[in-house]
Image 1: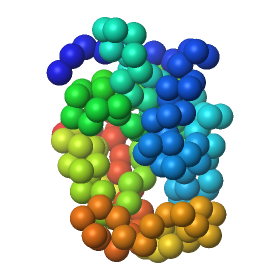
Image 2 (image 1 turned 120 degrees about the vertical axis):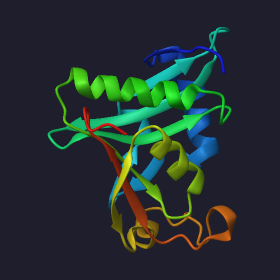
Image 3 (image 1 turned 90 degrees about the vertical axis):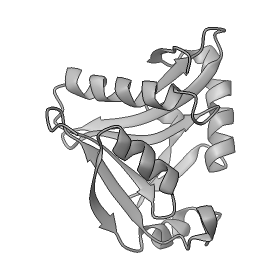
Image 4 (image 1 turned 180 degrees about the horizontal axis):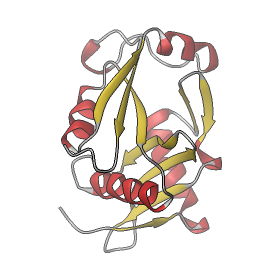
Length: 165
């Protein structure tokens, strides 16, 4: 795994980040907890490799409930950019005085569950039928997800500073 510079997105990197969102989500919109998010309007961190290329992006929303990771995508999964970005988001939350970092993933996304739990996040809730409802806002969400698993529910994970692993 290489090292990455993680920082706020620059205007000239928007096209590269938009391409990652197109590949991962089919465009700039994601639906989570009954909310349609336009990723282009949210604060975005990028991981940039030694050659200056965008290796990953994390978009978030912060409020009194904590820092919500709305999207995390790596150009090459398993290369370390996701870990660098999540670590930076956690540090951002602490610097903002927030008490948690949280996110939503779908019930089929076993790779994400493994990734987030290995980095100290805990499963704290299930919203049954949330993906079914999300299809009303984004009809292109498939019925079957990774590994042919029926896609119905959202899983809520969180990390709290000082809570340990």
